[in-house]
Image (cartoon, rainbow, N blue to C red; front, top):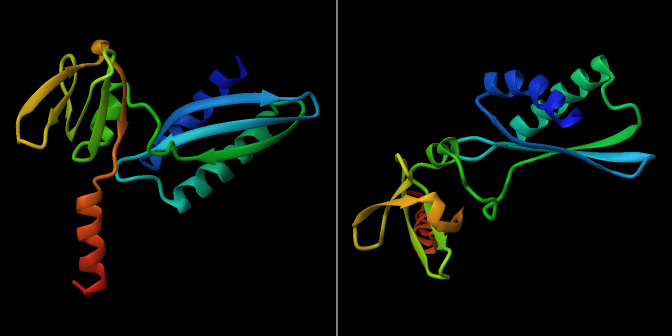
Length: 160
C-alpha cells in the first residue's frame, strides 16, 4: 500500500525532528490526488516543523517516484477534535485537559496525567484521579480550559 510506504519513508525524518506521524492518506481523482499527512508533537506542532516535514517529504517522494500521477501534499496538525487513542497520544499530551466521552453518553473533563495500563489517568475538577479504560469510551479529545486560557491572556496583557 502506498500510504504504508510513505509512512515508512517519513517516520525516521519526523522522529529526528521530535514529531510523530499520526496518519498518511492518499485519495482523490485520477488527475490530481491529495496526499494528506497528519503530524503531532508534545506542546503542538510549530509551523516551521510542518514546513520542514513537507519539504522533506516532497524531496523523498520525488526521489522515490512512488506516486505516479500529479498530487497535492497537505501536512497539518490534528487539531483539538482529533481522537486520542494510544499510549503515545496520551503521553504526548500529558498535562493538557481532556474530554472523555463515554459510551453511555456521559462525559468527564480533566487533566491528562498520562497513560496507564488500561488507557489514560485523569485528574478531575475535584482533584480525584481515575484510570479511564479506553474500551469503555466513545472518544477522548483534547479540551480547551477556558478559565486558564483567560488567565494566561490577562497575564500577557499585563506584561507578566
